[in-house]
Length: 167
Image (cartoon, rainbow, N blue to C red; front, top):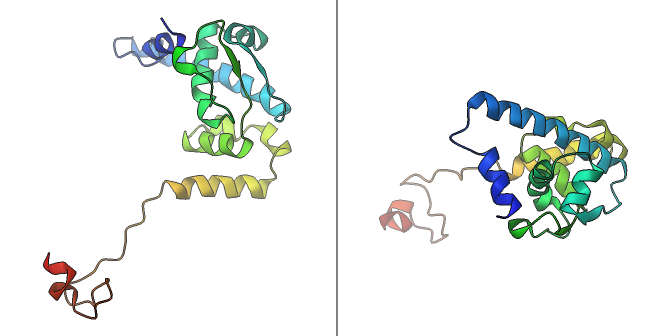
């Protein structure tokens, strides 16, 4: 069975005890934070190897590394084949710095996007701009309401109720 399926079955189990699941995620988030601290120290270095080798390098279990690879995949310059990944699959951690930062903001992972290592990568102004860009990209802005006696937005010169509002 592919590692990703095993990871997701464990991490998102609906049958698991809530306390066990909470401890599982707490342990995972701490390991994830430590991996990011190491990666962000040399952000331009592309770390690669098999899933097992990376798990050993970062001193985590293969399952934790699988979860990490699942989480970072959308931020990579070249995505890994996570769906069919096994212990001997070669993967890389070459991430796009701005995209990774914005994805951390999107996930609400303040313990990650507030890591001090980001200070050496982006100045405060850039981090604020990336944060704002990410937040505004998910904000829904409703268009101005058109009332029946308003001019029709199609530009016909007729009232809305006599034109497009008739449909």
